[in-house]
Length: 112
Length: 111
Image (cartoon, rainbow over all chains, first blue to last red; front, side, top):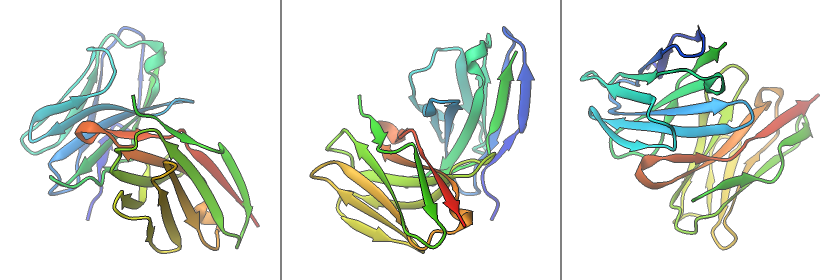
């Protein structure tokens, strides 16, 4: 069974640009979560989507947004990129009603 | 808000020894706890979980202990192997499916 997949693996942007990160959950999983792992800060919860709706949001500015598509895949958009947005962005998925979250390999975003 | 902390940022063990990684949490109402392993360049890998109605749960070479009285969680790895070298995170499930992670402990296994 394929795990959570994310694309691209690496993304390099300059300050002020926009970044789009993509995630495909494990087949059958309806919930998708996004986390930011910045150097020295651990994993921070960003967003939770379930069945196309945003269910929870972490303590991040509105320029971090996303959506979930009918096939349960998801996009994370980061607008007006800042240097401190450089981080590993991790996507996780879970079955509806289950707490276990399974992570993908992440997208490494570098903002220059 | 809820927080999760780890007692040691790094742990160095000899191959074959047992490893114990500790974690503390702040919210006594926390109900679900997970341990993840993250190898360099990879996403966190689910190891084992435990609910608050249990004190202990065992997997393959791993055991998680939960002490709700002192709000403490530990991961024990038996017969530690070089492949166990990684960063280990404990996480607590907060409201609305939000996982709250500790800072991580780097486990280094020496031959």
